Length: 156
Image (cartoon, rainbow, N blue to C red):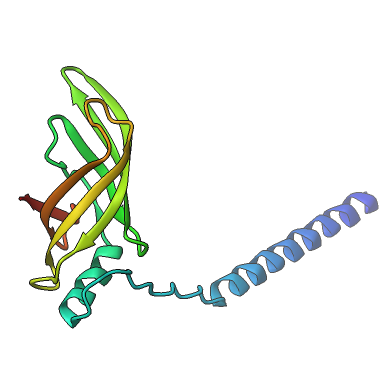
């Protein structure tokens, strides 16, 4: 009987010690501050303040549900990088079938007309999307919508 009481006491002490350690590690983890993300500026952007503001917003935007003016192709995720490249994960819908695909390319922009609108030239350098052939150049006005969709375009 004495052994049973002693054993129970040890279990209780061990459980309390374990609980105190987990509380300590939780408090330590919550007091650490995350490293702030370093702002990156795009290359080959016109030097005016409006264009720089547009480019900064562009690099932080992910386009979703965007059609690059191609029948049945929708970009599910379109991102722009500071080295003037873009990457798009897409979905091609043909009749009752859907196929994933990826397109990549480069982008250049004219002076922005506002911090949400600029005329751009995209050159698609690679694709595995059916019915698309690289290289292909597209001219468009890209609008940063500030919504979940991220972007909208008027093709020229």
